[in-house]
Structures are given as structure tokens and as C-alpha cells.
Length: 228
Image 1 (tube, rainbow, N blue to C red):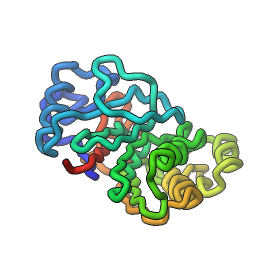
Image 2 (image 1 turned 60 degrees about the horizontal axis):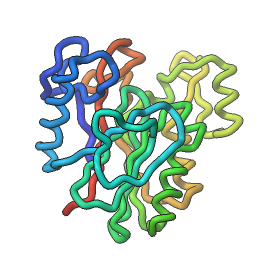
Image 3 (image 1 turned 120 degrees about the vertical axis):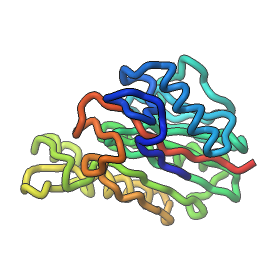
């Protein structure tokens, strides 16, 4: 399980430099070069990227989708050496693995996808293919933290009605959402007890892309794969 940052690529401003997102306005050749360079650094020949739509659809995969990926926010595989990537710039990359069952998964879990239940859906898909939540390790990557992710009060109440753990306030005592707490709770309810965190806040961390901080910007990614 690995998390990239914004350094070491070829993209120009405002995507400088390791932008891995193909739908944010960057030069497609630069994105392709960044993806190829990152895969090589991780020892991967093939990587699955999704067309992320802030939903809860997940799919089992055995190969990359190519130039026209379907609208998905979660993928899992049992193919060794096939990388799975979740692109983010304030949303959470959530990576899952059950090495004994030889299954790995990746999800993009922003506000809408978290409420819709993309992470529990991914756990369920992996369980259906032989994984055991009690054996799984989950990594929740960097995201907008609960002290920075300011939202209208009405939206906070709407989300908290489904996920009470998401209720939060900013350092200025304004309404906020804590998606890390909500996703952690979802994993716990799904039976996944071993959860590790990269607790960096994207809004506060200049080494990571943040849509809220920068507006037009690139995407970092969480990668997971099974060793061949």
C-alpha cells in the first residue's frame, strides 16, 4: 500500500508535477508519463484507474480498463502484480488487503461516496470472493481533516443522520465533517478491525494536491497490489 505525493513528475503548473488524474485538465501526455513513472517505481506493469463519480459502485477486475474506464469508485482483484489506484485531492483513498485470500481493493471515498457506502460495498465484494474482514488490513489515506472540512450546517446534519461519526467542527467553531472518523466506523461495522492511517490533511499539506486549497489542481493516488 503506497500513497503518492505531488513531486517527481512532469506536469506543469497548476498540476506540478506528479499529477495522476486524467480528468482535471492536465496535458494527457504528462499524465500518462506520470502514471508510467509511478508504476515503474512501484514495480508494476499494469494499473487499474477508475472513472470516479462519487458513488458506491464497485467491481472485480483482472486488467486495466484502458482509455474509457467505467464509472466506479471501488475495485478489487486477486491478480498478482495488478495495481489498483484511487485518485484523490481531498477525498479519501481507502486501500484494503487480505493476503491469505489473495485479494486487494481500493476505493475513492469522498463525502457522497462515504454516505453512499462505497467502502462497505468494497468490503462486501471482497468477502463474496473469499476475503475475511477479520484478516483484512485497511489503510485510510490523506484527506481533508475534520478540523478543516467546513460545510454548511444543513449538510453536516444530513450526513450525520446517516453517519453520526462524521459530525465535526472546524478550529473556528464552524460546521465540518470528519470523514476519517466516518470511514473508520464503517470499516469497524463491516468487521475490519485492523485500520492504519496516513493522517495528513490535504488542505494543510503542501506536498499533496487539494482541490479545496488550490481549486484547479492535480490528483495524488493510493496504490495497492498483491505481490507476484
